[in-house]
Each structure stands twice: as structure tokens, then as C-alpha cells.
Length: 480
Image 1: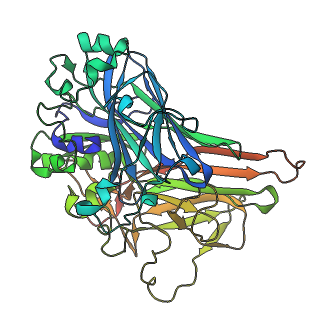
Image 2 (image 1 turned 180 degrees about the horizontal axis):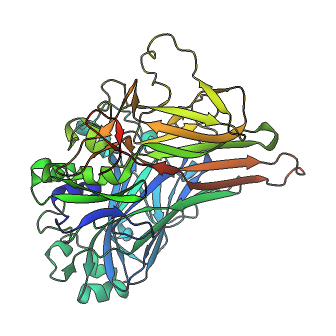
Image 3 (image 1 turned 90 degrees about the vertical axis):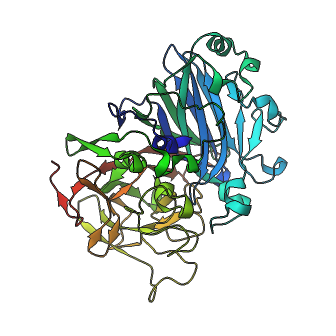
């Protein structure tokens, strides 16, 4: 299911998808999870309504957005469900695990998961590599380390009434165990929204925690996202442009006005891409030796796989530049241009590493977003970024003159003098840039305290962003 359900005809023409700035919705995008650098990721999902809801959890890896875990969670009225993406360390096998200690029902039931041990938070399930190995190989890595970071989607499938709603409120999970029960259940109502999510990255050894809220999308579906006899349909093949259904509109705020874009049935996924289209990202940077500071930006493209994932792509390549594992090995790269300013507003040149000609084989281009999740780093290029320990670092370059802090503007989807754009739909203009969301994170280490005292400080906050309309040539225009 996940976001591909939109392409399956879930949205009625009278509805429009939109990002709910109040933080509640039918679909939630958690921009990042990781178990790198001793961290684990805490997740929270809250049903803010009086109604019982079923939601699907989809965990996707960072390279190409391939699925590594999927299950449903049943939320009673005003229920909060908590989980952890973690690493069992010496007691595990290096694969991330999804662990819960919660009475909310899941489908399949967590009783089928590995049961807790003294080292585990609760019942846990290993992430699974099936979607990028064997017959599903996509040209990317096939080892288990590929699953160590990525992002998560949670999509409301339906509301429940009647005896199953009563069972959910009483946490009588045995009534909900059979995956065939809900698709044939008469008490399914359309998703009603009201889901809220948050995440936090925790490093126990370093004594740090930081996080944020999930991005909430509303207007996602006006019908239950179940079909009898098709419990396994929830994959990209069902979301093909031939699936039929109604057109869908997206309400996108651009420069203080709401722009309505209508997309045909063959391009429904583009309605979600439109919500995320970003011309420029804005935020702060810090790399100060005297206070031990570093900063990084997490930039996630939740719909990228629909455009770039080889035979699974469901819509046109644009606004992205290349298919996965074609122009760039094990990647799909779209360039950006950075403008750095120091605290006085002085422009600072970003000098890339010296590379003669094109990047050597296997080396990705600099100043580019090459994965479904990228971490823009402001420290020297390395195998893993200094704050998040990410293997998906995108290095900006060396500031000239040297500067330790300031503000940064990233212009997305740059190809020489041209700009990438999401092609216009049935009505409405094109949008320029790339469909992304993200946050900035800072870490400070105070080395002046007495030995043995933890002195690490972390913070995260959403990146600023702008959207702009464009004509067919990719030139920014005033939105109609």
C-alpha cells in the first residue's frame, strides 16, 4: 500500500490531497530512521480521534526506497503506539529490528515476532532484505547493512465499527489476527484522518536525543484501503498507471497562495510529489572547533522510487535526472547548488573537492542528492557523516574564505543552466525543483567540563523551503 495506494484510485475527484500543517492526517511520513553510530530511533503514533483505526507501517531503506518491513497496527480511540528501530548489538546479527512494548494490536500479531530477551526492548522483528535481493535485485547493494537507515510511511487504511472496534478498544487482538478478516469485514469505514506522529534519535552512550514530527498528508482516501481477496496487493504493481480510477488534485501553497493542480488517473502519484516539490531549502550550518559543533541536513524524497526505480517506476522520470543504477552506479543523482553566507551575510564560496573530469567509476558526483534519503554534510568527505554516522553523505565543499557557521540555501534539481520540474497535470502549472522534505540537526560537544561528565548537546528542526511555479522551459513564473 503505502503511498502507492494513491495511484490505485483511492482519492475521489471531490477531494484534494494536502499537507496538514496542524500535524494530523491520513498518511504520515517519518523522514528518517537510523541505527548508525550507536543510535536508535523511537517512533510514536497517536490516534487523536474517538474512532478505531487500522494503519499500515511501511519501512523503506535509504538507497532506493525498497521495502524492508510492513505490518498493520490497530489503534483504539485516543491510542498512542510506540516502537523502536534498534540494533541488538552483540546479541543480534547487525540487522535493524523493529521492537514494540505496547498493547495495541498488530496484524500479524507481535506474538509471532521474536519474543523479548533481557537485551531487547520488547517483541521484535528483523528487517528483511527480500525486496532488494534475489529476483528483486535493483543493482544496489544486497547486504544487510543497506537496511541501517531509511524512512517510514504510515498510512491509515480504514476506520472500524462494530464488534472488531470493540475488540480493538479492549485489546482483544485474537479477533484481529487473521489477515483475511478485515478485507471481508462489513464494518469498514473510510479513513478519517487524525493520525499524528513523531520520532526521536537516541544515543544512550552519548546522552543525546533529538527528533521531530512526521509530515501529515490529508485527503488521501475517501474509501477503505482494503479489497477482499487481495491482501497482498499492497505493492507497486497495483499502483500502475493502468489501475484506473479518478483524477486527483493537490493543494500546494506557493508564495502565500494556494495553487490547485489536477493530475489524470495515470499520474496520481504526481499529486503527492507536487505536495513535496521544493525549489530551495534553507537552514543553518555549524562547524566550530572551539565548541565542538557539527551540523547535517537530512533530505528525504518519499516519492522518488515512483519516478526512478527501473521497471517499478509508475510515472515519468521528471523531475529526477536519471533512473536508479543507470547513469550513476547504485544511485540516481540530481544536482543541487549551494549558497553559503556567514553570520554577517557575506557570501562564501563552496569549493568542491578536486576531481579531474567526471567522477571515477563508482564515485558519486558531489553536490547531488543520489538516494531516497541523503544527508548533506558540512564536514570533510568521509565514509560516514560526523553527526548521524550516515553512509549517504553528500558533501557540500570547502568554504572559501573559511567560515565556521552561517546560513545555507540549496537550489534543487540543477543541471547546468536548466532546472528540473514536475510536468504540469491536466490543469495548473509545472512546479520546479525536487519533491523532498527534511530537517537539520546540530551536535555540540563541550570539551571543557571535568572528565567523566557527559557534555553532548543535540537539536533538530525542520528545514525552511520554498516552492515555485514554472513554465515548460523550466523558468520560474508567477503562479496562475
